[in-house]
Image 1 (tube, rainbow, N blue to C red):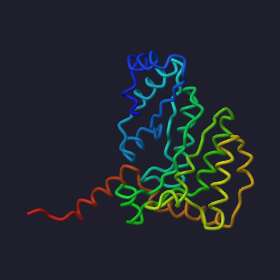
Image 2: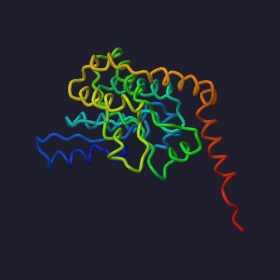
Image 3: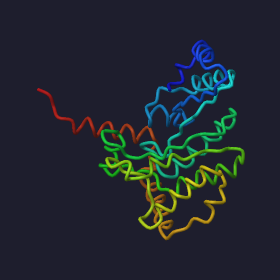
Image 4: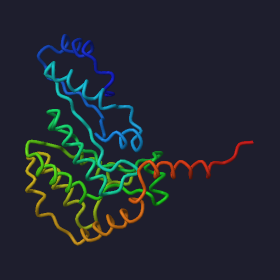
Amino acid sequence: MIAAFITSEKILEAKKHLGGKELAVAIGLQSSNDLVRELAVNSTCTKFNFEKAASILKEYDYTPLTFLMIKPPFLTEKEAVDDTVESISYLSSLGIDNPILCPTRIAPNTIGQLLFENGQFKPPWLWSVTEVLKTSARRNSASRPRVVTSELKPEGNLDSVCPKNCGKCTSTFISAFESYNKSHDVRLLEGMNCGCQADYQAYISFEEDGIGKLSIADRVRDFLDGRLKDAPLKS
């Protein structure tokens, strides 16, 4: 739901119909960083509206279910980890400790697909998802994020490019996330290892030495300039 649609009047009306039943309202915040949310994600959800909506829901003992993206378009792997960790901390400061993490898969007819085809963007590595969970747990043990593992399974997303590691360990990581979702025991992730971790670190360095040297605004501007340049002229 769009946060701006959540008002005291609407929630009070819901309370009248639901009585003592519990209600959880899903809100796609995606990122606590204004630049990332407004420019990279192109979201209309402002932090002001989000905080107002979360406050209203809590006032009526309802639960805001907040969705965050791990690696929105235009972000590097390192930026994605930092952004998600900061967003989880932001939610914790509001008393929201159950964020739902969505690693970005590349779906058809999206900006992500155009960037992917141009070699300018890839879905996050599962190493990055692991790093988000481990770092967040160290910062705040009360936080209980969950990973949407359905976004990681190619068999359920035949038209998309899903987040992954190498062919040897991807399924192992997905299973570990599913176990983590049930227990929130970050120790389940501490022993994860695979030779592709070296490839992951090399990819981070590659991004930071390349596109990472540009601001996000410049990346978006370069992308848009390229699209306009390649657009066919109309007579």
